Length: 358
Image (tube, rainbow, N blue to C red; front, side, top):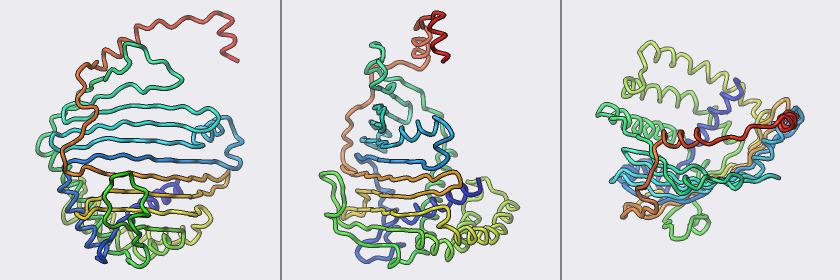
């Protein structure tokens, strides 16, 4: 469990490194520009995919059929997505398409629409499952209006501000010549029609991650706690005694982290971890991508993860090009439950029961 916690933290720090720079501007200034532009982003279209291959090796696979089924399921798992996001009107739509690999592949597709009032979705369609005719192409409507109020809305804005502020602290500790490489727009695998003015690539491995965490973890942690103490105590519901304990624990955490990092090669091997961010002339992010090949080592076996993501953004701050829109003919969840409750399931004969128990 301790190893999982440590690796989760290291993964978080890795993802926070993914920030670009353009026009030879230092990373902190660039991020500040991007954050400001993000606040102006009112609508956009997006499309992309995520691919993952996971493989367990060693004794963990030999212990039962479950692990082998998981290996089969994640042999080549792909998620494709496309959609539109708009702030005014407050509306998002996305169509997800998932496909597994292995000897028994399957495909699932599900469209989803979210507004400030409701959520609309279709039951996932699968090759191996015949959807009842009455539910085909029918959207289920769920009330999402929670009467947030001004206090809740203010907290949401504060959380967004907190994330931006924490990002700025981490960027302030990055050395540009160590982590960033400007790449030509032609090297970015973005979708057709995506505008790219500048792009950067971040490449990490065991050595660079170890150096960054050893040199910066304690200072970053203290600066984040100071930030929270100054601006976000009420937002996070943290008391003064809790803050004092957190600050005292930072130094001890650094000591434990240093010990773990000294043996990092024993429990994780990063063969590839590349990340690309690209932006248009207005410094709106128009592409994000990653490519990873990481092996987690354990006593009972190793877990190798090969993954990639590619997401492109277009039609920024233009008229939203919704394809689904707001569904008109819908069912509520109670109607769907009633429908399935009314389906008669044939009872098994004695012979069938005997066969099913084998």
